[in-house]
Length: 554
Image (cartoon, rainbow, N blue to C red):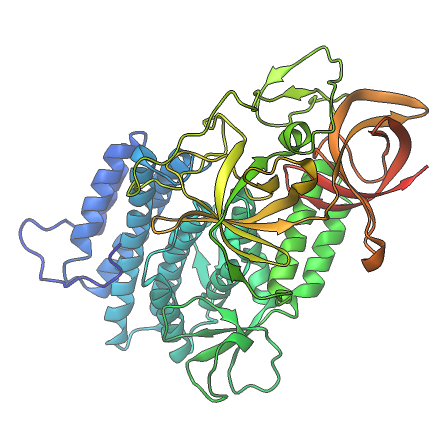
């Protein structure tokens, strides 16, 4: 993706007609129902407009007219490659690149407009609008890259930082601008959009699911103004993060970079005032009548609160490894294959062949889901092409035939692993999925390590990379069943019990599917033939694939 501004020439007799009346008529005739044709026309028109010399007012009016149809086409394109197998390839890859290019052409147009306005004594309102629109278009490129777990284009952060620096220099970063790119136009300003972009990057998006990345981005529309940007020499700020306006780097922890206290290009991002707002949001989510939606929201907000307010520290240094490891994916697969404690299946009336733990939509009884048989029937295939461009393919759907996969340890710490998928086949891995790891050749259940996928990212150089956090050792497979008024409700569901660790004061916890259990409900668990009645007291986590609870015995 070319992020440089193109050379402009005087328009000729065959140049695109930017007369407002002619342009309006041309845009009204676009066949928006035909995404491909409309994309071709818009892309060609923007390419011509960005390479000719135009009066600032003419260019500004033309770009504003283009914004609505461009947003319409990019939304249609996103439906073709989001929530699809990753890394994007074939037609999906074409759609993704077309979306990024179209957003970049719009951003380029507004950057050219801003560049032209700097040499004139025009009103600052037009310059503020141009910089604001350019930032919004570049933020769409960054957001889309995060949502499909690819590396954002080189030079993107340089352009983003430069646009804010330009606004800050002319003291228009806080000037009100009507943001027409939103579904409902609203007042905004350059500084809030820039802080929204910074905070999205600091939310560790490669550790979030696609829907959570989008949720964080939209939430920051309202929250960004609660954070503050300060100069490096401001002694009143206690911000954890900093950004260099003359670099091609995203924001990072302030303590990890060296800069002078009076460096004019450094800005400190202070997120302390966001804490109170986030606590209010968490309280509101906990009171939500929609328990499942509220639970997902709470979990995401808790992760964001940690990302924006706490600097993580590793307990030990990383040690590079190159050992193969087997990974079993999913609570049900771990229960059946890794821990080996379950010898019988509950009797149920309905069984569906699916790879997700679906539940009865009435939320009254649970439906047992049967996954494909995994052991020994779907042998893995070795890599045959070391240079395959799709090495490290990922698919969170039914394309993978086995939920036991071979990975390679890239490095290891006291709390987890970094794993590489050294294969050209697809993987079932997802952010938030429960997994079990074991060294190849050691199938003893006591040797398995239970963990959660916290981060994933794909690059052509390394393939698919996972960050895995280890959970408590000594896990045991159990059966769990809702229990109300002395009567068991619904079917028994497979779960995993994590024993407590007295030495560090860690309580026992229970891993269960996200539905139908919730905090406060009573259940019965069967552990090695022993049945206990328990109450789920506190939900520690809900990743969408499983939930973790503290409990007490009744």
